[in-house]
Image (cartoon, rainbow, N blue to C red; front, side, top):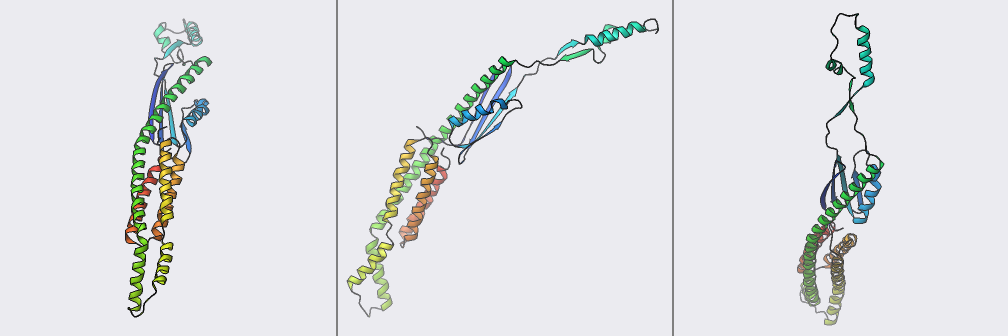
Length: 296
C-alpha cells in the first residue's frame, strides 16, 4: 500500500432535483483525525453519515468539509386572491349610483395591493428528500475519492524525500562507524602526548598503565552501541515506508529515537571529525522528522 500524506484538496459537483451541489474537502497535518463540517441550514441531518464516511477513508489529518446547495432562481408564480377581489367588486357595486365616477377597469383592480399574490415555492416531499440526500452523499464520496487521490499523490513525493533522507543518514552512520573504528589508537596517542607534555619528559609511564588509561577513555567514548541502534532504526524506517498507509505515528516516534541516538553520539565524541559527522547526522534526522510529520 502506497504512502499517504495528510495534505490535499478536492472538489465534487452534482445536479440533483434542480439543485446545484458543491462539495469541497481540504486536509492538513494533524495528530489525529479531526473533521470540521460547514453545512447549509437544514442539512445537519446527514452530518453523522458524513463523519462516518470520512473516518472510514482517513486515519489522520485535520479535514475541513464544505457543502453548498444552490437552487436556481425560478420565475415567480402568481395567483389571484379571489376573496380580496370579490370584496373589492362588492364595494364597487355598493358605491355605484352613489358616486359619479366611471366603473373601475379590471387592470386597475388587479393592480391593487393584495389582489395578486406570489405562490410560495413548494418543498420536496419525503421521497424527494431521500433522493436528494442519496445524491448529495454520492457526490460526497466522489469528493472523498479526490481527496484521497490528492493525499496519495503527495505521499508518493514524500516517499522519495524520506528515502533520500534515510540514505543520507545511512551514509553518515557509515562514516561515523569508520571514524569510531580508529579511535582507540588515536586516544592512546593523544593521551601519551598530553602526559608527556605535563611531565616534561622527565618521567616515564609504564606501557601497561598507559594502555589501561587509554582503554578506559575509549570505553567512555565508545559510540558503537549508538551506531548499532541507528542502523537498526534505518532498517525499521525502510520497513515502515514499504508498508505504506497509516505509518505516520510510528515514523514520527522513530525519528525521535534517531535524534536521541545522534545526541548521545555527539555528547560522547571527543574527536572533531566525529563531532562534525554527528552534527551532519542531526541535520539529516531533522529533515527526516520534518517530513515524517506530513505522513498519515
